[in-house]
Length: 134
Image (cartoon, rainbow, N blue to C red; front, top):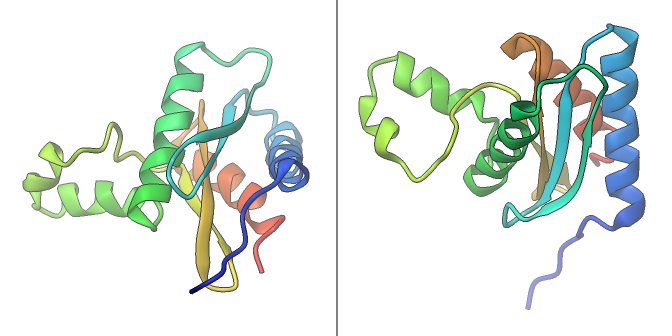
């Protein structure tokens, strides 16, 4: 039997706060979502000024990253590189901004961010994921 770490409330809050600090430092109005390794929502924060749709997209970016065990941007890269079959994959979004949370080499969840440019979303998500990554 294998064992693995799981995200608890303390880690979810740490991720949200680290991502929020990165977004606020840059004056970015974003939505931030944290999911477990199965893509189920654990926490969410929509900063003032972020469009309501950002909350939905952030959750889906996180879910895509958790289920795929990779940054959501890699799916976007595959489609842009000509692998159009990924357009029919059971992923709601393949946009940049979803980042897995790794602990001891295992994906324990993911962070999704939406509201600014793709690389900026990914920057905020990475700040959150790195706050608990080991």
